[in-house]
Image (cartoon, rainbow, N blue to C red):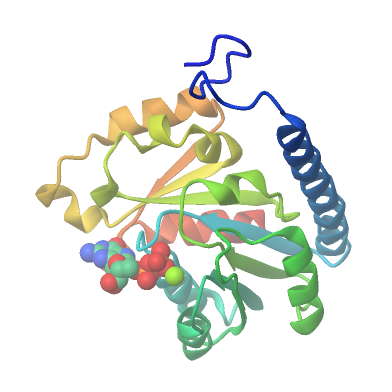
Length: 235
Ligand SMILES: Nc1nc2c(ncn2[C@@H]2O[C@H](COP(=O)(O)OP(=O)(O)O)[C@@H](O)[C@H]2O)c(=O)[nH]1
Ligand SMILES: [Mg+2]
């Protein structure tokens, strides 16, 4: 390992770090631009009383299923619009439209997250009514979406009990940025080794104010407490 600069590379590597500096500058530039777009989005949400939630999780934890069930339960009570993020396909937007809400699909290609600029365009294309809910389903992974503020009111982390109780320790940034963890697929608890109390304790270390909900989008167990939370927090 290189002792000259302590960078962890092999000892014969070039000490020209100009590229590293440029990378850091580019990263800072992207992040500060994202923050500006996020502030604009947030202003729009607050002025129009649109309650915006950013759903983050691993692929397959049940985000779209939860949204489908939520739309079915709530569409007669308040308007709902959805922004779907996936690398490819329109599949989730089609599921959402079928459940009865308007949806826009953003395909990120090689990208691993949605950014605030994309959300700004999508909210211009959607007809989001005042006093409504906007659900943003982010690209499925527990890494990149943690870094990008979209202007949302809350990041909601969906953790399926099939994923293991150690996930807060492995992906601390995402848990730190989230306000609520929804444990999904609790119908599968008898078949997996998932220590709910341990997982909660790990998550609380990263956000001491974390709220927890336990649901099965499949059986409907716990869905009432999630819907109550949503109705009580609308703007
Ligand atoms: N057993 C069980 N399966 C679920 C539950 N919620 C979702 N699923 C299934 O998990 C898979 C992935 O769900 P999906 O909503 O597409 O996940 P997403 O990738 O996070 O949007 C699908 O086969 C769902 O039917 C649940 O509460 N229990
Ligand atoms: Mg989905």
